Image 1: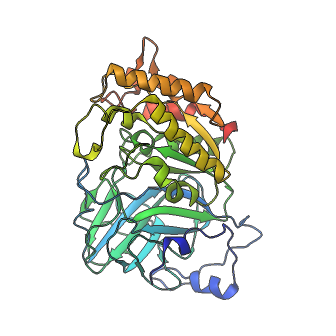
Image 2: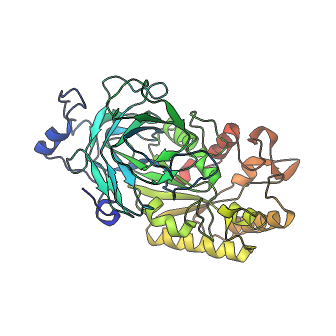
Image 3: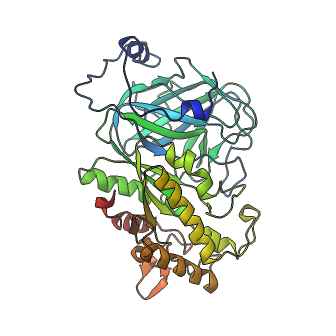
Amino acid sequence: MGTSAQSLRRRAGTVVLGLATAATLLVGFGGGQALAEPDSAAWGHGDWVGTWAAPPQLPSAGFVPNWSESGFTNNSVREVVRISAGGAGARITLSNAHGTKPLRVTGASVARAGVGAAVEPGSARELTFRHREGTVIPAGGEAVSDTAWLWTRPAELLAVTLYFADATGPVDYHMVSSETSYLADGDHRADASAAAFAKTSTSWYVLDGVEVVGGDARKTVVAFGDSITDGYGSTVDANDRYPDQLADRLTAAGRPRAVANAGIAGNRVLNDSPCFGEKAASRLQRDVFDQPGARTVIVLEGINDIGFSYFDNPCAKPNQLVTTQELIAAHREIIRQLHAHGLKAIGATLTPFKGAGYYTDAGNQTRKELNDWIRTSGEYDAVVDFSSALANPADPEAVRAEFDSGDHLHPNAAGYRAMAAAVDLDLL
């Protein structure tokens, strides 16, 4: 059954369990054995929070090999995601935001991830949509699954498997996952084994969100930005992006919060891109306001507007020279929208990029001027100084060598750890 984004996403963040509905949903996938209904006194509050996110992008060749343009026919796609907060139940959101025709998802499952494409035996749960096995997502729409009762913990890896019986054509995807996804021929939603999943990719497909209910977290922090938020340069399958490591800090400090990563590699504040998503202000509704439990947003955007001004690439068009005032105006629009939705807006300074492929002295001057405004204008509710966290003390225009992934723009795992450490948890 198809449903529009407006009607499905999002509802008020409270789950109400009817016994008949709970009995329908609490059935083990494949085994037919009923699970124990969660004890409402034991599993806490009923607020949904966005525990994982990957903003959908237009199908494209991108800059990493992917399956978005070819799509799927009689394929199972198993996608591994690391959640930031746990709970008693989970649901997923699927995107056809950029589709030109309805997308049929024949069926889906969620399980605790094992090694590679394997999942923990006995943990798989069928995901239904309005109590039906599959769903048809209209062009431009999204679908939210019913609740699957699966106990999860912060930082746990889940495997979501989507089965597409029919030819999909091009599909929404998230280009830079830094996580391995797996492809099999046929329907392998219930397989615990990895044997059928012979092909791999480092992008996510159709899946754009995981939400949990019944855990300790009541709020979601949204990390909003470009490739540095997205985690480009982090370790594949290690989940050491800065939002991951920020979530770890919150958990260790006993401050239950979900952290949703709304970064898109290449994203800008002034212009859309055929490869790198809609400009920041244009995607706030889908990627921030629709996140259940969203309360605080960390905004790290603008370096691509600056760099692409001096870089000729089809994905970067249009790439006119940008001014500091234009960037400030774009940030003000982001702040205006965040405040209009009652969210706390935290501005992050743009990180050093001397030596990067699109570095220029003029562009760096624009970065410094924008950072001065972020730090001193008082227009953001608070500031995180990522620039200082990564800067080389001997050459502040460059990233410290021990934090550099090698391209002089994106941090490595240690650099992302330094970014996470720079966030004052009291601000969240």
